[in-house]
Amino acid sequence: MIVYFLPFDKRIPKSNKTGRNASEAWAMAYIETNRLIVNINTHLAAVLEGMGFESVVLPPTHNFDTDKLISDWSHKHVAYIAGLGNFGEHHLLITDKGCCGRLGSIITSAKIPPSQRSEAAYCLEKYGKSCGVCVEKCPTGALRPDGFDRHACYDLLLENADIFEEKGLADVCGKCSCIVPCSFKNPVAKLAANETKAE
Image (cartoon, rainbow, N blue to C red; front, side, top):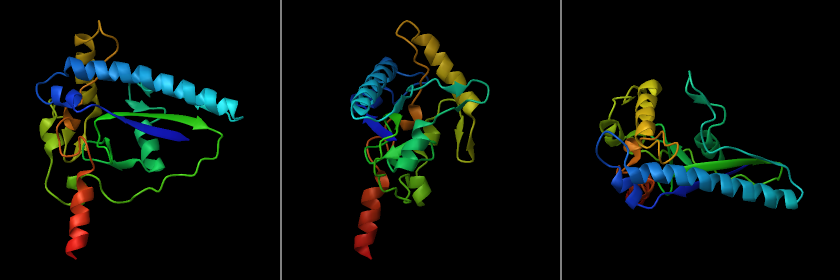
């Protein structure tokens, strides 16, 4: 399996930090990155096939049960298993480059050594420090310290899809990931390193 994270340019999340609805820049980044992920996966599959390996090209999104809102293939869970990061309070994957970006993956018969997966928290809240900024930023209240209402979240995604319908399919929000401590980095890494030095 090959899994990768494509971080957004910092201007994209900065454009989406306030308001109820997603910014146009955030919606366009989603649409364009979906195309990029398809292109990357198609290219990887061709290269792997040329090397004699089979592969399965996976869609970047929209492979989920619309009633349960659970995907058939979760790029973020595969990325977690592959060692790209750990989950935050917002239920997104926080990588060393943060959570503002997109994940893609491809299944292959090629034997690729796995990355080392860290069990350490990447989320300040899960590390035991007070944060909760992602929860505060959720415009629908779908994200709570005690859980996540995926249907309330999805209702806003569909609202945003209607707003940007002429641009393409952009059922997005991203407020919980934009301009929070984990947007562009693993905020625990430096903190944990400093605590280790102090010991």
